[in-house]
Image (cartoon, rainbow over all chains, first blue to last red):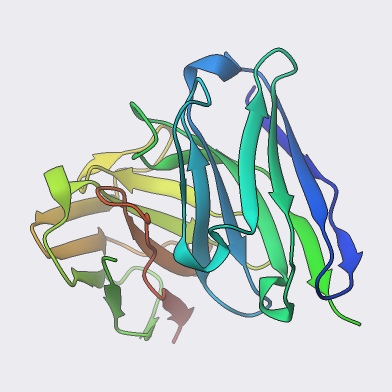
Length: 121
Length: 108
């Protein structure tokens, strides 16, 4: 059974940093690209970033480029999102998801339950 | 950036009725890399359709997707009580992989 478990969320002050982790199990992690998607309270889904299966290619939405870094440790079956210079508008539930198709440009077929990040003083 | 516009914003229907949801892209979506997701309150999204018309594993055949280029449609042939939720489209052909704003299907 595919499982994705996010951790590392919490309350952080504006300008601060936070690292989210996503522990994957039930599939061959290094065969799949992985994605982060966020959802602000009461709002729609926003795609944040994707990383290829090897970690060699990464893509970001414009609003986080230069502040967020996606990475993965295939030896530990874990996906990361390092977030810095956090702003109030980054407050959201952050979902980790597996890309089901070939390469990073594919739909997300399994999702974690999400980690809540709140940026507030 | 490819902007996806979903309509209507809210669809009020009764169980057993047919639901037709629209997703329009600001430019042609490469290879029809268009996906549809369902989200219920307090839950993570669930993939329904990928590549515009392929059903994901375990998705009932009352869900179908169609379209190409800039116009895509999700159809639920006969609404079941568990289908009342918010539906999002996402294009996966261009970075950033954008989502539409969602359509809420509510019980009339």
